[in-house]
Every structure is written in C-alpha cells, then in structure tokens.
Image 1: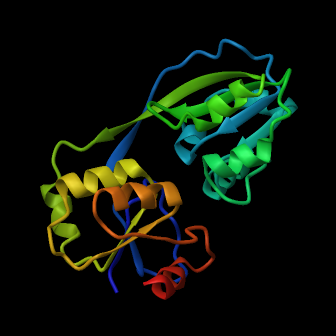
Image 2: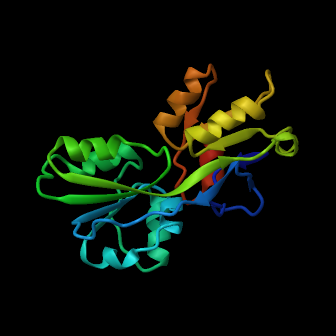
Length: 216
C-alpha cells in the first residue's frame, strides 16, 4: 500500500517506509512585534507557530494551550508544558476554554490566514485576544515533479484544507482510485464539497499505518 502524508511535519510511522511524507507547500517565517506582554494565556495553533515564535520567555508565567497533539509535542521539546483539547482543532479548544473568560488576556500564535474561530470565541465571551502572525504558507512554483510522485498513491492524507486545495488543483488526475484521509472533520467537509469522498482518521495514533489500513 502506497501512503502519502502531505503534512509539512514529518511523522514517524510504526513501520519504516510505510508512509511517505510529501509536503505540498512550504513555511516561511514572518516578522512580528510582541506589543502586549501582560497576558494570562497563550495559544499555539500549529507546529509551525511554535517553530517560528521567538518569545518563549513569556510562557513561564501563563497558561499555555496547544491546538493539537503535534503542537503539544513541539512545545514539549523546548521544555514548555501545554494543555491540549481531547479533540484536536478549534472546536475542541473552544470547548476546553469554556465561556468564563472575562478579564483574561489571550495571545494567539498562528499563521497568515489562519483560523479565527478561537479568536472570535474569546472576544465573544468578554476576554481580550491579540493575534501574532509568525509564518505564512507558500505554494511551490510548479507541481509537475510532485505530481509524478503521487501517480502510484493508494492513500493520501491531508492535515490542512490548504494542502487539499493544492492537491485537487495541481495534482489530482480524474478517475484515479485514491482513498483520501483527513485529520479533522473540517478538512473532510472541505473535500466533500469538492465532490470527493474522504474519511477522518486518528492521525495521532501510535500506529498510523494500521489506523489508515483499517479505515479503508
């Protein structure tokens, strides 16, 4: 079975070479200014937000949240403990934060054009929220060579709607018999709207290969 993971973050599979990692875009850092250091909570929306943030000293005295398990691991590697929702993603984090947010001041670390659901929830329930954009996603100049790598794929895994958008615009060949897997319902719904069937998997399983195999 030929499985391709489109994430920009390499995930170790339980079986060597069972899953090939082929990102469909690159991450570029964005310069930012930290205007408010008097905050109570900080949220990292992705692994890239951890890799491109520079002011980790403020994390020592406040609540730290990671939107998913991969982001939590990235923070853990630099010695920062964080709280993660049981269900990764915006909806899970919103549920974790709850509605009693008055007087709290949040800093949200994200990418350009990143999700706004958490920011809107925090504002709605009376707290202050500042976004820090520290990276952007950039498409490759062409996808001819990458397209060839997908020619024999049986399964393609998407960890973002951006990767799915690029795939169906630049790589997908109509009538190819490929199974599409997603790490969230939001990505699944996006692919469904494009007219393709997709299934949601537990991307953070200890055995991703078998997780995919049993879902097909």
